[in-house]
Amino acid sequence: MADGASERIRVNRTLSIAASELQWRFGPSGGPGGQHANTSNTRAEVRFDVTRSPSLRPEQRRRLLDKLGPEVRASASDERSQVRNRAVATQRLVSTLAAALHQPRPRRATRPSRGAVERRLSAKRQRSQRKADRRRPTGED
Picture (cartoon, rainbow, N blue to C red):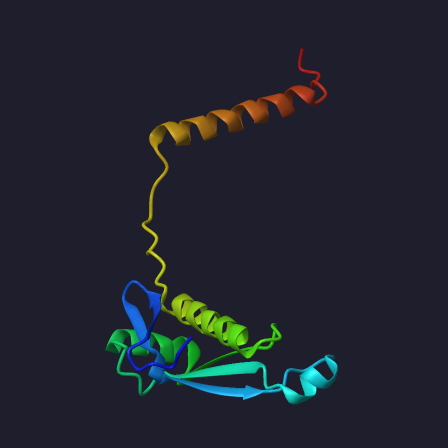
């Protein structure tokens, strides 16, 4: 993944971010690994500034600020390679942004059909009668 100014990262159908808008930091990964872990800066952290991004439309910016704040970060130290960790961190950032931008469809209130209501009430009557039949008969005969 080159840091070319023309490269864009696609978040969803309506948003793609220029790779130049992402700031990267690298450091050593935690955990065991011997000399390799102590000398390699394979952990990748990517930051995206929501407030200054020219790629965002106003409604997208407002939604991201409300849900995620002024800066979004994602990091990865899963892999032993910095290049693969960059790809994982980028994917995590994209999925975080996409989830925050997702607008669930509004629920449209519905009513049960007349047949459904009648079936439910009929089942209730049958269940009530079945339980009434289990009771000890009263001595009215």
